[in-house]
Amino acid sequence: MDNKSVATNKASVATNKASVANNKASVANNNESVAINKSPTTTGCGSGSNEIGAINKYGPNNNKSGRTCCGDVSIETGTKVVAIVSCVFYMGLALFALYYNSIVYVIAYTLIACVCLLIIFGLKECNPWLFLPYLILGAIHLIDRLFFCFSLLKCATQKERARKLPAWYGVEANYSESAHNSCLSLLIGLVMGIAFFVWTYSIIFRGFLAVKELVAQHWSLHATRLQAQCLARSPPGLPRHTGTARVQRRVWQMPGRLLGSIDVTNGVMKQSMPTLTTKI
Image (cartoon, rainbow, N blue to C red; front, side, top):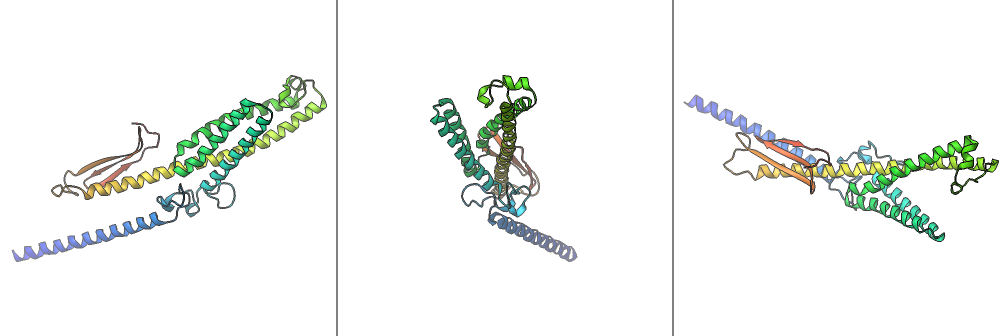
C-alpha cells in the first residue's frame, strides 16, 4: 500500500508540474497578447486608437499594402487625403457651375462632395460601409469616362465621327483641322485624367478593405475575450476540461449580420469567422 501511495503521490506531483508549466505558458501568451494590444496602432480608426494594435497588416509595422501613394504613408492617411482633396475639388466644380447658373450640376457636384465626406466619417467611426457610395459612384463615373474616351478616339481618327460629335464636347459641328486637334487634345487630357482617377480610386478601395479588416480583427479579439469569460464563469460543478462542457456564443457586428461564433467543447475553443456580409 505504501508503494502504491508513493507512486500515486509522484504521479500527482508530475501532474502538478505539468499544470504549472501550462500555466506559465498561458501567462506568457497573455503577456504577449497584452504587448500586442498595447502596441501603437498604424492604421487604427479614430484619433489615436490603439485597441486593435499593430496586428493589422496595413501599416508600417507589417507593411503588406501600407505604401499607398508615396513613401511609408499608411492607407488611413492616404485615404483621408484623397477624400479631402476630392471633396474640395467637387465643391469647386459646384461653385463653377453655380457661376454659370447650372443648377443640375451644382446639385450633382455637391452630392459627390458629401459622398467624399462620408469616407472621412467612415474612417473616424471604423465603418467600411460608408465607403460604398463613393465606390459605386466612382465605378459609374469611370465607365462613363471610358465610353467618352472611345468616342474621342473615333473622332480623332474618323472625319465622319468628328462632324457628328456634339458641340458641348468642345468640338465644332463642321469638321476642320482645329476640330481634329481638339479631339486629340481632349483625348490626351481625358486619358491622363482617367489614370489619375484610377490611382485615387484604388487608394479609397484599399482604405475600404483596411477598415473592413480592422473591424474583423476587433471582433475576433472580442470573441476571444468572450470565450475566456465563458470558461471562467462555468458552474463549479461542471467540469471544464472533461465531460460535457460546451459553450456557444455569437458575436454581432450589426443587426442582421453575424460576424463570427465561438464553440468551446471540453475546454477547447473553435472559432469561426465568416465574412462581414454573412447574413443570418
